[in-house]
Length: 286
Image (cartoon, rainbow, N blue to C red; front, side, top):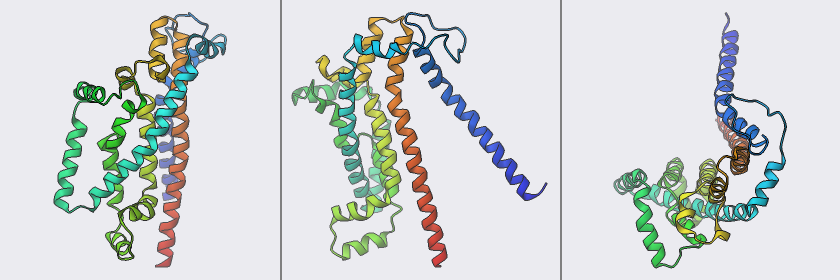
């Protein structure tokens, strides 16, 4: 077997393995969509049904009749739309600042970030509630967005830090010699070079705030401010045996995340192609 044939077989096996892994992850989502189209009140099938006997598209319309689902969707969109840009800004500021520190202070802050990341979130519920109650932020969207001002997660800060560490120090120093301040260096040099990190943090932040159930449950009291996860919980309490409606709600909940990941995947692929082209250009210049 020639080298070319071996290469073709390796690529074929790789794509076959990738399809198998994709099927494992896509099969549950497909089952949820098909289950949402079953007749209302029908019990869940004991077998894996690829297609229901009849497609009940009215299940999705019935959700909006039972609950103010459009309001819950709007609330979740508002929270996610505010959280994503603010998290990118704050986390990138923190990551850029850590990257510019001396090695000793930098390592200490990284260790602190890892320790904070390992802290159980349940340990923060009571003190955070007491603080927000004293600040009179309970039952407001600001209570849901308080983690934004700390970068939402230490992981996001570390992602930006690792991205900014790849920027050559000569580039930063030359920019400072040209008279650029810290914010100018961050916006004009660091952030354009950290587009993959920005995309990754944006996607992860959207998923975190879009699917957040505990914080709206703890800090929101008015039903008009409930987000979509809380609304789906109300739907479950209304009729716990109506699986088709529950699966329809789950489909509406996960659809924006799936679309976002598909769009982000294309953006990451385009970014990777751009980096490859730039590397080839640099090699040609040499």
